[in-house]
Image (cartoon, rainbow, N blue to C red):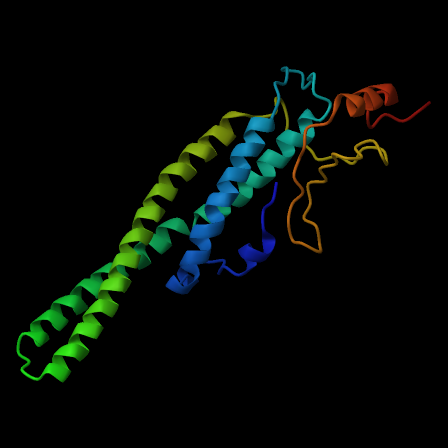
Length: 212
């Protein structure tokens, strides 16, 4: 799971502090976060009611999925505030275009007409961008709701899953840790273990039990 902490930190935390200058960044990284959450959901294996599973990493995978879902839910709170800002931008551009068109009709000098034409093209560009941003936000609302609903539908039975640290070397080549890498600010990607790695883990016996 590659939740990009650095991108997240560039975004204001509260909806009241959002501005359009951050919207393009939000529209870029939010779909990536949804893709990561969807991938995490698909990795969650079947788990019995007692918490047992054929996959020795089941609880880790469910815990990572829940952790990423919580982060996506927090980021999703920005969608509606951004949508309100875009609606205001669309209204502003539309009003400006009407004023420019009205003013241009009263002009006689070619130089003045050209200035109005430049202003109109600039406003049309901003207007079209805002229209596209609104469409992307509306699509994001729909997709976010569906993926979060899917994530909530797959729960670890009986308790909140925990990310544990297995014996050193047990997960070499796979190794999800559930925490962000300090250097990159990203969460590690959970890769399915190979058959050889599974055999090694089985030979170690149940994880987390002390030897007597």
